[in-house]
Length: 75
Image (cartoon, rainbow, N blue to C red; front, side):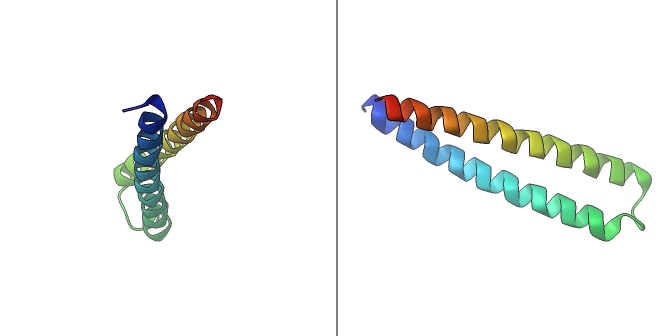
């Protein structure tokens, strides 16, 4: 497998992971908005921390994908 094909495959997998993380992030934010008055404080804190963690993961995946795309341009 050529390096070009390998980079394309890696970018494809990053797109899948990115989409899953975005859907998870949207779901967590929606849950927090709907339940901030009813849910126990512990769950609100855990949900907020999870939202921040997933958002950081989205940013990391995005930067990694752009690096791979730039690397693909060089080839």
